[in-house]
Length: 336
Image 1 (cartoon, rainbow, N blue to C red):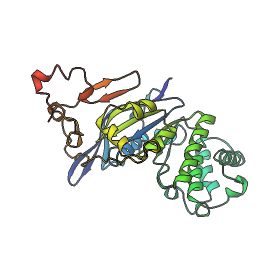
Image 2 (image 1 turned 135 degrees about the horizontal axis):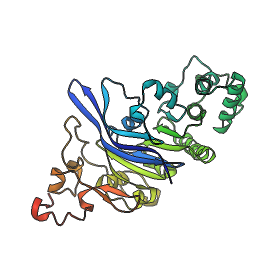
Image 3 (image 1 turned 180 degrees about the horizontal axis):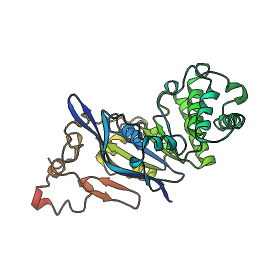
Image 4 (image 1 turned 120 degrees about the horizontal axis):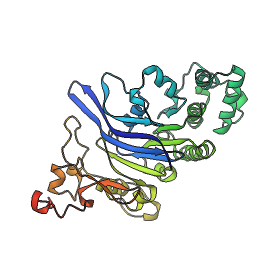
């Protein structure tokens, strides 16, 4: 499977009155054609900052990308001008935001809003653009699209508005779709419908999807691969089966223990104790140390080297490093 997007050693910082917040610290991952990659983790771990960096939507100031590459079809997006990025956004890479109501203009009909993107990126007539809007509304299962494209956002339910936002993001046939918490504001019934819609749209269009979420239930339904983020770093990555059934990082295991499961009825949920670290001064070692029951002295001193578990599965954890036992004599690798 060939990669369409490659994020390499991405670093993003924000300047605040309290100092520099290092929000993303060396994130790397690839997105392949036609797959769904889910990036999961607690609030504040850097998921949304990573996705907005891909789109070059980080406000500067206070934010800035200090290091790394974002390669789309082999071209580094960080080297493009703002005018060049405007051509990429929507046409090549599109984004769905968390709240559909704030993503839509209440003063314009949904037909006009969706058509705006088509006319900006394509040299076609308004009549052709209108037909494309109707076709796209049909694709996302909006009934009576010919009539409904004349209506305003407030005339639609939350689930329908999210379908409209999805239609808007797909109308220019992008290669990559970034969905940032697309179902958080919806109830579970509508959420299931939207997730099913993602799968149907991907099957019909072949679009590659990056799904940003903290909800592992959502991930289980749609993701092909999963990247687990913590304190601005990807600490584990693998396919869906490897992460859900053979997770290696204590943080990933903690996330899974804190999610309700139908096959474990009657068992108590186990929350992860403590809080994420302060990213004003990130720790030199593993950032999960204060919350990890299995932490060793070396974890506190040195950030773990990436350990390859299988072809697709890797983890940043000293517990999985083959050299851990050899280091006992040099760094006192004892259980704290």
